Amino acid sequence: GQNIDQPTEMTATEGAIVQINCTYQTSGFNGLFWYQQHAGEAPTFLSYNVLDGLEEKGRFSSFLSRSKGYSYLLLKELQMKDSASYLCAVRDRGYQKVTFGTGTKLQVIP
Amino acid sequence: DTGVSQDPRHKITKRGQNVTFRCDPISEHNRLYWYRQTLGQGPEFLTYFQNEAQLEKSRLLSDRFSAERPKGSFSTLEIQRTEQGDSAMYLCASRSGTEADTQYFGPGTRLTVL
Image (cartoon, rainbow over all chains, first blue to last red; front, side, top):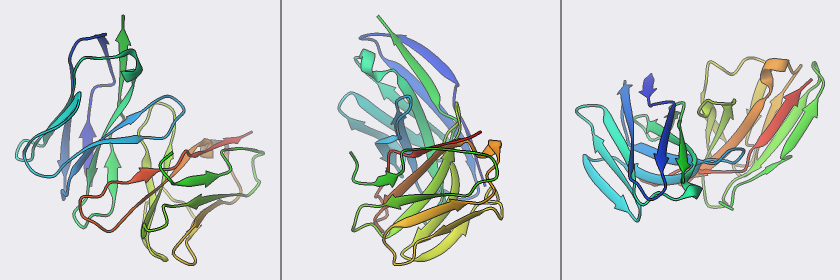
C-alpha cells in the first residue's frame, strides 16, 4: 500500500515563493503527481515526476527523490488565484492505482 | 473542461434509496477510474477499468457499490441502499495507456444523502 504525508495548511504572501513537501512510503512506485484543486472543483494536473530531479513548468516546479521518498512542489511569484489545495499522488507499479495524499490547503494573502 | 463529463453534477437522495452516476471519459482513453472525496481529504480510489474489464476494486467498496463499463466507453457507478456516510463527491477520471499520461478528472457528482 501507499502512505503519503503532506502538511495540512500553509499560508504565503502574494509574489513570494512557497514550497509544499510530500513524503511517501510505497510498496511499489511508478511516478508521482501533483494536482491543484480549487474548492468545489475537480483536481487539475500540474506535474509528473518518475525520475529523480527537478521538472520546471512556468511558475511551478516539482522535485523528486525516489531514494528518500520525497517530493516538493515549488510555486513562484504567487498569485491570489493560487489559493487552492495541492494534492500529492503516487502511482503504483503497473501504472494503475493512484493514491492521493490529503492535500495541502494553501492560502495566498496580499 | 478536461473532456471528461459526469452526470448528474448534484444528487440529493433519501437514505435507503439507490442512485446511479454516469461518467463519459475522453473518447480515446481506455482506462477509467472512480474516486470518492470527502471534505478536507484527497480523493480515495474506488475502482479501475481497462476497457470493459474491472481490474481493481478498493476494499472501501462495499457490496452496496457496483460499477460497470459495458462497452469500454462510458461507465456507471451505482450505490444501493444509500447511507448518510455515502455523502461525498464522486469523481471519475480517465487516461490513455501511455506510461507518462496523467489522469484527467471530470467535474464530479456531489451526493447528499438525507
